[in-house]
Amino acid sequence: KEARSGERERERAVGRSIMKYIYVTGGVVSGLGKGVTASSIGVLLKSLGLRCTSIKIDPYLNIDAGTMSPFEHGEVFVLDDGGEVDLDLGNYERFIGVTLTRDHNITTGKIFKSVIEREREGAYLGKTVQVVPHLTDAIQDWIERVAHIPVDGTGETPDVCIIELGGTVGDIESGPFLEALRQFQFRNAPHDVCSVHVSLVPVLGVVGEQKTKPTQHSVQVLRSVGIAPNFLACRSKDPLEQSVKDKLALFCHVPATHVMNLSDVSNIWHVPLVMRDQGVHEALCKQLNIT
Image (cartoon, rainbow, N blue to C red; front, side, top):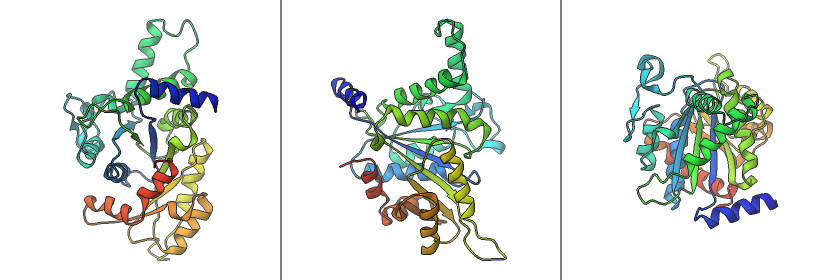
C-alpha cells in the first residue's frame, strides 16, 4: 500500500495523472473482433471526457507487419511516423481520434531485439538473461513508457491505456506477454487495471443451443496464468439468452452485468452503441474507480 501511494505521489510530482489500464484478450478462436472491441471501449471512455490511448501486442517474431503477406495477416496500416503496423491500429486511430506511433505496436521481434541489444551493451552486468525477469520487464517498461505518450494533439498525457493482446490465450507465442501482463497488475493498484476477455459463444447446428463451455475453458486458461477477467465480451451470431449470460457469469466468476452481449451487427460502427446500451461504460468506470 505504501509503495503504491508513493508511486501516485511521484506521478503527481511529474504532472502525470494516474494511468488506468484495460487488457483486451481473446479466447477460443482468433478473428473475433478484439480490435473493434478495444476501439469501442475507447469510444465510450472518450465520450465521458477521458483521454485514451491504445497499444497492440502482436506475438509474432517479425519486427513489424511491413514484410508480411496481406493474404496471411491482413492489410498493413501505415502510421504518420512511417511505422508499418497491424490494421487494428488503424481502427484505434479512426474510432478514438488519435495519432499513434510505431512504438504503440509491440511485437516479439521488437522486444527480443531490444533485450539482445542491451545484453550486447553489457546492460545486464553479466547476469544470465532470461525470459523472466528480463524479457517480461522489458515488455512492462515498454507499455509504461508508451502509455504516457500524448496522442490526441493536446499534448496531455492519456488517462486510460487500452492494451490488446493479439492471438488467442494459450498460444505458445503469447506466453511471455501474458506473464508480463500478470506481473504488470502488481505495478499498479488493483482498481487501476482491469481485463476484458473476448470469447465465442457458438451454436451447434444440430442442437441449436448457445454453448458456454468454450468460453468457460478459455477463461480457465487465462486464470491459470494469473489474469482473472473482469468482463466477458461474448461474440455470437444472435443475442445471448439471459440464461446463457447467467451461466457464463456463474462459471467464469464475473458479475452478470459484466457479461457483454456482442452479437453480429451490420456495421462495426454500431458496436460502441451496442456496448453503451448495455451500460458497459458505467461498469468500466466503476471497476476502475473513475469518477
